[in-house]
Image (cartoon, rainbow, N blue to C red; front, side, top):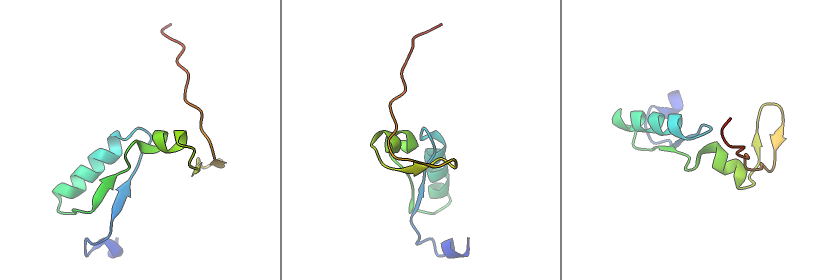
Length: 72
């Protein structure tokens, strides 16, 4: 946190769908941190673009879109 005291650091938040990271960035901006952003498209879009990410169980290189099976 000491690195962020000057409020010059750029903060990019992310989550799976984007909702929580948008809320976090908005909250930081309201508190005066104008360098807080949310990753557009969230982690879902990142993975579908073929960019690698670490799940904690290993690195995923390519994610396939989830299939919809309709309503049950």
